[in-house]
Structure formats: C-alpha cells, structure tokens
Amino acid sequence: MTPAGTISFARGAPSPDIVAGDDLRAAAARALEQDPAGAFAYGTSEGYRPLVEWIADRQGLGPENVIATNGSLQADAFLFRLLVEPGDQVVVEAPTYDRTLLGLREMGAELVPIELDDDGLDVDALERALRDGARPKLAHVIPNFHNPAGCTLSGAKRRRLLELAGEYDFTVFEDDPYVELRFDGESLPTMLSLASDEHVVYASSFSKTVCPGIRVGYLAGPEETVAAVRRMATNTYISPSMVSQAIVAEFCRSGAIERSIETVKTALRARRDTLAEALRRQLPDARFVLPEGGYFLWLDLPDGTDVDALEAEAKEGGLIFVKGTDFLLEGGDSSLRIAYSGVTTDEIEEGVRRLAAAYKGLVGDRAQSAMGATG
Ligand SMILES: Cc1ncc(COP(=O)(O)O)c(C=O)c1O
Image 1 (cartoon, protein in one colour):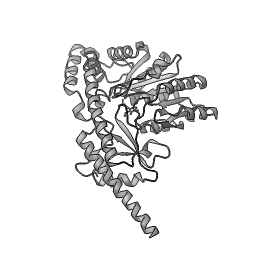
Image 2: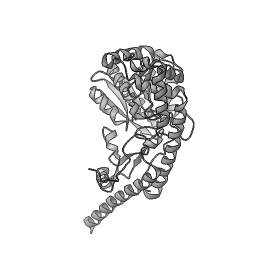
Image 3: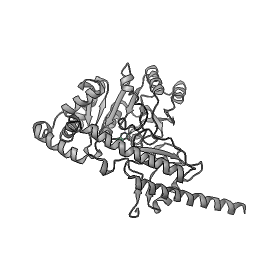
Image 4: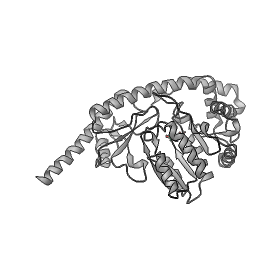
C-alpha cells in the first residue's frame, strides 16, 4: 500500500490535464457521424484506411507499407512473433523498455545486451560483439528520448547502425513512440527514412501525443513484412478497433494532433526543466543526461547506493519510481527512472524533495554504520 498523497514518478503516461479532451470529443462526434459504416464495422487488419493513409503520407510511404494496430506494443508483439524463433539472438539496449525484455524473453530469444552512451547505443560495442560472432536476427532500438534512459541516438550512430545491419544482415526495429516530443535541438532523420534497403521496421504510437487509452499505434516497413504482419493480425483479431482509429484519423485530419503535440511538449519541457533544476539543487550526488524530449530521465546515484533500500524509504515518504534493475538483465543497482510526464511541476518539486530526503536518510545510515565499524 502506498500512503495517500503519494507522488508517482513511476508511470510513463501523460497527466490528464495535457490530454486534448475537448478536441478528442469533437473528433469522435465528427468521425462517427461522417463514416458510421467504416467506424462501426469490423474493417480489415491493415487498420482504418484514412488513418493508414495519413500515417503513410507522414512517413513518405505507400499505404501497403503500414499497419495500424491496437497500440504500438501490439505491433511489437506481432513483429517479434514474425521474426524471432526460440534461440534466435536479439540485440537489446541496456537499459531498455521493460516490456520489450518481457516480450522477447517470452519468445525464447537469446538477448544480446549492448550498453547505451549519452548519445544512444554504443555502436562500437555492437560492432565488437558482431565481430566476435554474435549473429542477431533483430536489433531493438529506441532512437529518440529513450525509455528509460532519456538519451537520443546521434545521426552518425544511426547511419553506422544501418551499415552494420546491412553487413551482418539483421533487421533494425526502430521503436519510436516519443519522436514528436522534442523540446530542444534539431530533429534527426528516422533510420527508416535513411535506409536504402529493407533492414528497418519502424513503430510509433499515438499514446504519447493523443492519449494512451485510445490504443492506436502502427508499424511501417517493407511491404512483405507488413503483409505478413497483416496476416497475423487477421488471424489474431480480424481488425483493430475501427472506432478508435476513426477518431484518431479525424483528430489528425483536422489538425488537432498538431495542437495536442504542442500542448504536451510545452508542459513536458517545463516539467523536465523543473526536475533538472530540483535535482541539481537537492541531489547534487546524482548524475543524469538532460533529455532533449520525451517522458523520462535516468538518474545514476553514486556506485554502491542501494536503490532497493531507497525505493522502500521513498515509498514510506510518499514517492514511487521504477528501479534501474527493472530495465536491465543485470546491473542498474544504483540507478532509477523518473517519469515526469504524469506529474505537475509542483509535484515534481515535492517529489524531488522526498527523493533527496530518502537518499540522505540512506547515506546517513551508511555513514553511521561505517563510523560504527571503525569507531
Ligand atoms: C519504447 C516504447 N515502446 C512501446 C511502447 C508502447 O506504446 P503503446 O502505448 O503504443 O502500446 C512504449 C510505452 O511506454 C514505449 O516506451
């Protein structure tokens, strides 16, 4: 049980105040009025056609290169089922999204973890692993505003990764739900747009820019792969939710999506700034890379900090977060993930105060027991 008034740095979801409720209600009314036959029917597994076309247009692809799914997690699951056999090697980032680890483990994949630098995947380490004999089928990469690490893969690394994918013949799975939420710096091209061959499959989502409850995401890539995923989707659920996709299609067509992205970005930029400033002031022992966008900040505490104990202490003080170890096969014991997407700036101030108090309690205990040992 968490005490009442607990602040959550744990959930990677938007707070209700930044969801465009009025625009969504209006889009829903128009969508269901304009195309009841399309919205209320089963539809086909490619998804609601006007939405598929909008996505394809935005990505500079044809509709045959896109499938719209019930959230991008569903797209991930289909792709893993299509490409990964038990025992296949799959490159994962360390750390990475915990549900990716879960999904791949369920497929019986042999995971090849590659560390992240401040500018994303350590491609030199990947190259060494490949030279040493690793033969992955797939490399799962979160290129922008990483969950959980907050970092962004540099342009040079994107290109190098594509070269390696060509040379060693593996698919890059570009898992990109945060791409639209850049606060600073220049946007970088997707690997899907840079690839000159068929080595990239791309996924993104409306969860982070519209709302997660609508459950609409998509996969884009080579026609053959998309066709195979569509067959799999037909056999799984006939079609995704046409009602949800019709609403999102109208939300996009009407331009409400651009307003929604601006609202989310403005709020999250302020939350990130408040968080970074509060951490620098209240927890100077902590190290972090300032995220240029997205929902998350990864906090490294000094080696030897017991984040298990910190979590328990913080929870008692009314703060929850996710431990670093949840995002890794091994390591991460002195790290944690802070999601600033679901909390107001006031809650962030208070949450960091609680975190710093828990940390000081822990460090104080450690200093005291060290003194007891020597004194
Ligand atoms: C990297 C990554 N991929 C996929 C997802 C799943 O998104 P969706 O809500 O579209 O299923 C998330 C959600 O947190 C995520 O962080």
